[in-house]
Length: 102
Image (cartoon, rainbow, N blue to C red; front, side, top):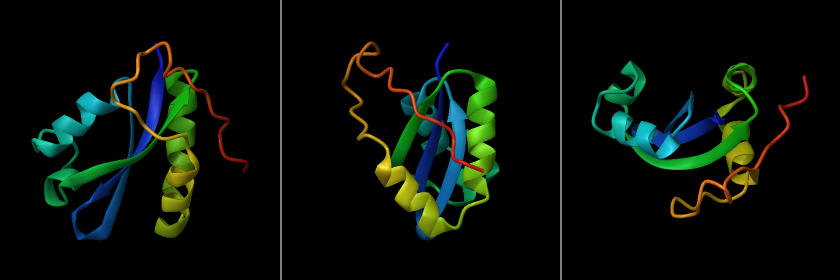
């Protein structure tokens, strides 16, 4: 199973970072207010970026590292990831990224 770390642009110019095996589905959950408490208060506007990870453990570690960054650094990181094409096949979407350096 492929896990991803994702960064959402939310209302109020806020950012939300999370992990999921299906980012598009998770975005819809956040938008329908059945996601995290944060996104219930600050609804998501767009997926800024998504980074595929080899395991849930790797995704959790990367999520933690990202949550330590400033909002500006999070935006820059998300924009450095390859663009998201929701229509691309799962086989084409198997990009892997290294975790942030400590």
